[in-house]
Each structure stands twice: as structure tokens, then as C-alpha cells.
Length: 74
Image (cartoon, rainbow, N blue to C red; front, side):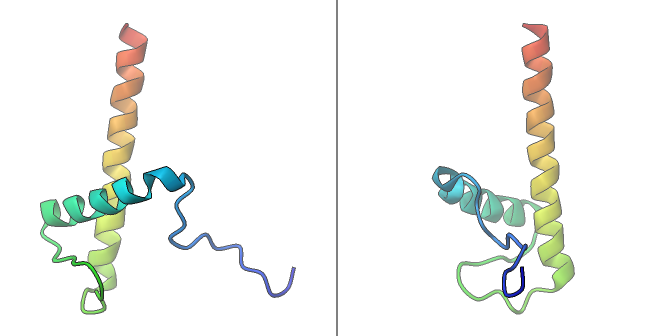
């Protein structure tokens, strides 16, 4: 498969969720003190960007675990 990329990049798997994920990203950045802004963010370090992404994943996992626990109790 030469010439093709296996990387998904910033692709959202559920297009309807794109706006919500974008908003979530800014909320998380604000919560953890990363000055993320719309447009160019090349002044942020890779560590800052990674922290935003990692914290987003952590919060999504926590939300899923909560939903699963509530489902099992009810």
C-alpha cells in the first residue's frame, strides 16, 4: 500500500460529534491551564498539547466507567 497513510490524524469517527469534541478540547485545556485558542497554537509545547489530549481521554474513560456502573446497578 505505498502512497497511503494509516494515520487517522484528527479525524472524528462520528462526524456528528465533531463540534462537541472541539468544545470538549477547549474546556479541558481551560480546566488544566493550557492556553489553547482557536487557530494557530504553534507556541504551545508538545507536552502541553499531549496533556490536553491525555486528560481528554482520562475524562472520557471516567465518564464511560460511570455509565457502565450505573447500568449495572439499575
